[in-house]
Length: 432
Image (tube, rainbow, N blue to C red; front, side, top):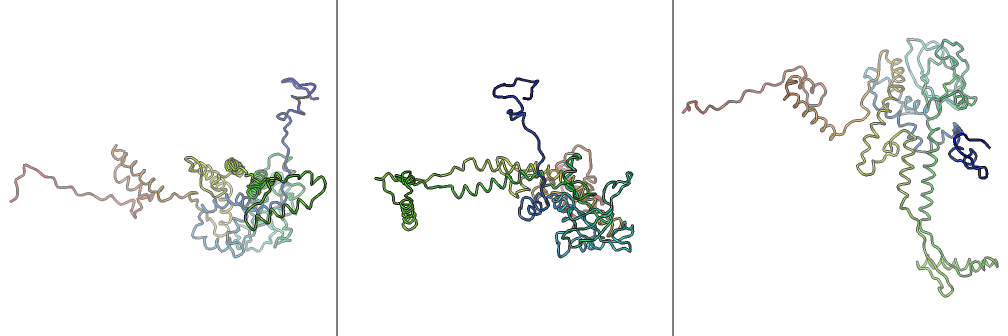
């Protein structure tokens, strides 16, 4: 028995010890990592898993604009017939799904793929390789290098169409998964594979338990709906017939019951022999609230609001979902700045040197919201004008530049001059 210094332990029942106290006996245990096959099946067959994987990359790329000077070439390279959604989106998604992937940069140069990428190389194609189809054939052993103990040269393996291709790490854009904390988890996530590759894990790994419980809950609801109303037939002498193994009588009686119900839509019973029939209905009173809580748990685990994860409108009293969307857009903007923009700019620099993407707002206001914003600005301008803080020319320049006037106005042109209105003098002689 383990002694306690902060309380008492019952020597007979052992209550209070680590063996029987549920609160003290809890231990955090590492879950079994999802295999590459499990992750691939989830991505292909479970729509929630696919949405969790693709939501952040999709909204981040949607809010980025490629400069016109590189747009045509970028579309030709990134969006092809095999992958119209784009190789960049695929790379970001597979990186989140498998805990790492690379976008191979196919550049036109005399140097082989296993050599470092030349400075004047021009991009011609992109291809995505998930982490489990990569093998490091050369490890960086220089402690002063940023890629120390990471692969310098990789080989594509498995069923990939470029299997056997060897390339230098400078010819790849690394797409990350979730960061692993601690050496123990790092060794466990690698599990002897992908040596030389960053130790990331799939974004579905910490969400898997919530996904499984959500799916199980809906399967249980489906079964409950099928048995929402169960008929109960009271058959006199059932126990005695079972004891004497007189199965024929039971089967014949149930067959007659079924036939009479299917033909005449009635149930014939013999009350003199204590037969009875009734239906037991299942209760669904608390089911909507329970499913809402399970859905909310999954949304929290996926780090997305339910409106985005499930594609449904906010529900409940005064529910708008505005605060949830603001938090989500804030996280998506962080992901866009830290991860997506550097990768896209790296690709654009190989198409047209110096080209960089432009960030657009993550959310676009509706026509009603746009009108409310414009009216609020107009009221603010009127207040500052009445107080003498700004004049008409300053208001005109400010609103012409931000486009809130919805008019084609030159911000540097002076405001129109209103002609003075004639005044009436009662003492002036009348011109007859």
